[in-house]
Length: 233
Image (tube, rainbow, N blue to C red):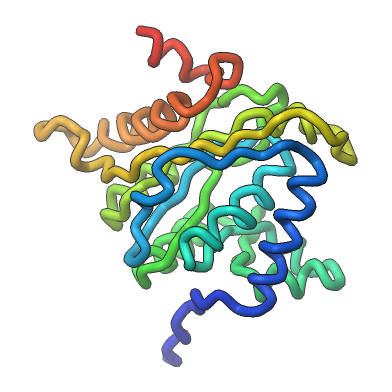
């Protein structure tokens, strides 16, 4: 069996150009603030960045502002159909996006994500899996919890507020205006936060809830959604 080549995490000229262009686009759409524990994000080793997903603007916001600050390529999982589009597919293939077949079993996507972390790279995920229809947090899937527990990679929670008002789900084009804020939380290892006697069957659910509460804590009340009560209680 032929060994797979290691995943490339260099900051290529293309990625530098994309992040530069993304910042121009983002600033044209909205007033943007980046704040929080940016200096505490690890600069090496496996890392999971997890954010809420309320807008098409979220991906360029994260990539264009965090990649230059980290000095590391961010890896994403994207639907394989994206790679069939002219130009966009080439950019995705060379910009850190890895194709995933939505019709296949989730285990394949999980293995790819775990490989990215096992090789010591940065993986970005939206735990909700899809954009929120109203900007508020929806129930998250458990895949990120399994990844964090199995790999031991620290998780950096990120809360993106206001992007849903610039480019909400269902709107074909953005309408400039408003203020978008990206708040970066402190990195943590979920396994360190669980009670020592936590059963394996409960660890996944508790870890998902823990990660989402950390994200909710970085958002305004209107965007905390189903995780707002946990913070207020």
